[in-house]
Length: 307
Image 1 (cartoon, rainbow, N blue to C red):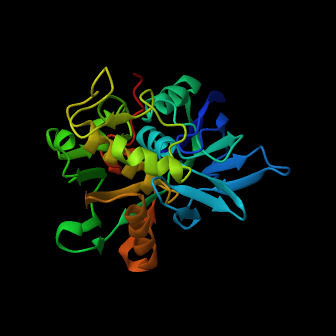
Image 2 (image 1 turned 90 degrees about the vertical axis):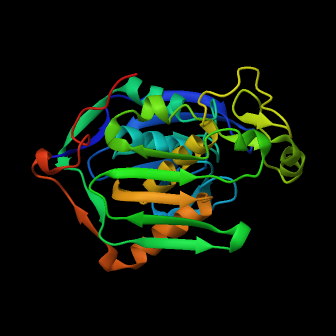
């Protein structure tokens, strides 16, 4: 049986929110089988649980926000990406503010935290959402066209193409494909940082956004160059961060997908729209388990590699 996974022990981190600039403490705790990933706002008068789901996503401006009642947690996608990359099914995320800390702007710190806590197999079958036929969402036309699509695939792979019409971004890789079965998420995807442009920063801060952003947690560019003294971590870091984001956004469906995801200029909003479109078509997917690990997609039954 392909088993569910949680943490062996709890682990903690302290940081600031990318957009709020608030100090936030994060505690990642083991959870029982079939719990899923649950964010818990422990700073509220009565703690509020927010289980992840496609329907829990209530805001997608510059990040993915999940809500329950009046309680919200912003910028969940990097932590969710790390959970997807390591195959974690059940986890409590205790948080003392309304935004997940940005840490270094990638998911690498979350991968380190999760692996440091250890990953434990549980006595319950891992449930997957298997895509049975193509599902696609599109927006805009011509130069404004963007789309995202899921196709049947025995495993989970992603391909993403960006088009920013910016000289720095254009000089790097514009398209990347990543297959989770490679086991190289931590090495090839997790270190890709979020990025932004100085020309947008003033506008964002006037709107109360990016208050915690800086060169220590994002790749920042002016019209001509990358301003970070250490440069890029990958030759194609920008598009790899889009893969990282997409993995986190898609994992908000609550179970790992068995599908091939492809996208052109997609973002948090379109990724969530794609999940909702899939769920609205009951004949487009099924929930499956694997009693025999040999029937599972390559790479899904192996323990997660350490760094």
